[in-house]
Image 1 (cartoon, one colour):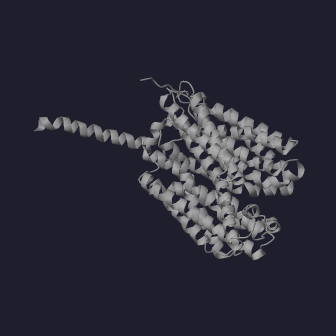
Image 2 (tube, one colour):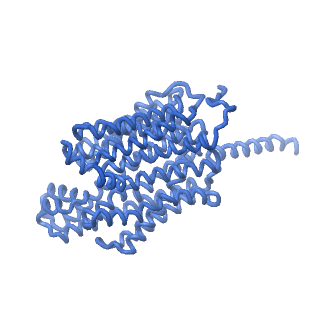
Image 3 (cartoon, helix red, strand yellow):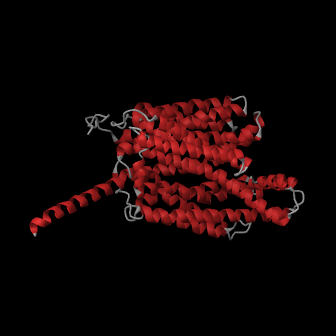
Length: 536
């Protein structure tokens, strides 16, 4: 067996102050990633007024970032384990700072699209390197609390990104959105230089470039297919071809990982139910929370006619629980297993989603506010537990790999959920419009339904001239309720699986601890079996 060595001298103690500053640096990075994702759409309209670029180019301001980040998070985790977590974190924050400074100087929307690719790659490096570093700095109950803070930071950046972007644009311009990201990244970069110590997996020898390349290509093709599906249709030749190519790359990736000496992804980890269960947690929050984070403001402002301030107040009921509930749920793990707690949170979200189906369009009273609070509360309970659970079920020297797997799934699931719900909302709206007026041109129905799904009621009315205002509202209302039922079914299914796979997992007992207990029991059983003949 190869002897393991440490990268940090045990004679040099890590002070509480140094650990705190490292934590602050990683939290800033974990705020910057979702903030960059969710603030982009808020600035998109203002960018289109100043720079040349079509509708498709504008959409790629967000899509390019999501695709680049989601498709390389696992690779970034492997790089962190191999070359050093501080090095990868440093490169990520440096590139994020420089790119954020360059984007306000872009001469066209296309240039911003190009810059968003390295922006997403850098975000993946910063997240994977930073979070895996924390897994080495903290242990036990302290690590649970720390990862709860990471969950809060990630959630706050995602939930309040559009609000912060709106404030910056109101007092300055869209340039301030990217400059604020540069400032956050620069502060994290300085803290990294002076207070972080490097660590890596000492048993890592050589990077699995073939596996890294095929995985990145597979996820890139899949994400690109989902992003393009609302435009070209789910059964379009381009989309089907991309899905087929993605499936081919997945098969090739599995073959490579089974044969390579030092695989990027240890496929044997998927034999453990708890490891698989940890990867299911983002699924429920993606469709019960993340997707609604985009759809609800479009409904409030574009369909129901609320102004931005009133819509923002309503969204506070939805997003505020992410600021404190994850920390509270981490404390409750001392008494309640993580799986049970996460599953209960999902059921609370299901209750909120069901009640939301009973709220009429245009009603923003107490029932709407309670429903939004319930959905946000339910999503916030497992939010702060996900990251710690993802790394606690594998050995600590594989933390970078675990972070990469979980991070890649979380970002890719979230990004594809946004695209899927938009496509489903348009599909459901088109079906209702076709039922009302079967004689309408199918292409006209597709265009009008897409405008409804995007929250542009006036443009939908101009396209669908044969429908009155009431018909358009009815089509949207029925489509929105069907979408909620899809979210209910997916969240409920995920909750059942979490109860089954993670029901007995506690915060201080990960998969590795469970394996050791099983090994000890087997050794005792073997010893008793060996001694039993002598006793007879």
